[in-house]
Image 1 (cartoon, rainbow, N blue to C red):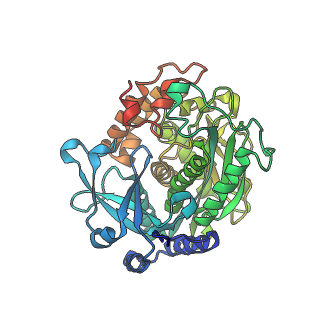
Image 2 (image 1 turned 90 degrees about the vertical axis):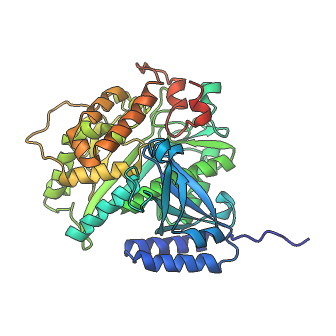
Image 3 (image 1 turned 135 degrees about the vertical axis):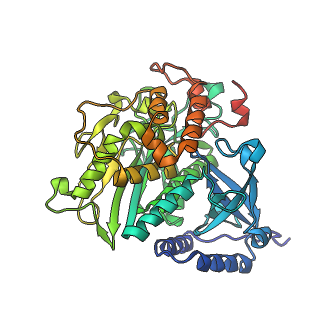
Length: 472
């Protein structure tokens, strides 16, 4: 019997070529109307495509995906709507309808063996009913800010992320944590010496192949310090692309693990007694191809601009701590017994400093934010970090021995009472984000203690769903 379903499946080497070419168009700032016409024509001509996955990110950083039938999308691309009241932190029930625009520059071909055949993925932009940018869409906020820097100063802001995660036995291990009370490692081997055919190494190899096919420009991958922990590094890119890649990295890791019967977790500290996971974020600014953070004769080879960038970050460290560490569980990671970057200082060598100055040359000079957790909203975090580093208040001097909060309630107080964060985000987003974090924190133990508690997993913003939330 003939195969009745003939859906698009592209070899990995061709996927990489297509996705890298699409990324280059984005870096070259090809006009959106040109890209729209090109992508729409491709969708119409490619008969093996059945659906387009349009994704967006909510205020807390969860990725949401909607699959649109290709033929419907071609007719209705300018009039897509969804119920915003079902997205926590978005519109109220009385004003539920929101629109979804398509960012045709953020277009990805997908490995069919991981995501299913016959689909492509594109990022969306959340819009008000009148088509203006929605206040809760941090992706749009970041894009507008980066574009303004480019138009005013010719600046390009670059970011590269080192995202750590854990691999646990069983599918949906986080959602079942309230039943099991524990996570099971797939291996207890440590840094660099997991066997080539171990479950962890097999997962890393498969996920890295997917990553490469999606145009990440891989650099290196390896098991991390803690048991069953992994990290897969890739090249820097313009900050809005890098933020999208954070979301795609976590998505492809979760999907790959699920197909292997396991769970990829990006909880900052899922297991008591071992190192947690971070999302070290490397930042730099360039102008006409020149790295503005580099100075051959500067301290640590950094320019005055880069040193001022660091000082502004440190000066506003308490204001932004909740943005970078936005869950109850994140404050377990800021534990000085496990190389925690909780000290409000910079250093080229001290792993306890929230800002590290890596060894760099004219191409690679940068600053590394170490205090950011892997469950942060990357768009919100990048916006706050970049705008603060470039525009924040320069301190006369920085206090010595200062540390970040060790619990979410203190971080909430710093964020909600900050006039600076109100200036950056507006009072509406400041109050919405505060309310979301208080709501989750109140369902978790007030005092953390030393053991991971069920509630901080069950009500974590990347884990909880309507079913788990109703169990309170």
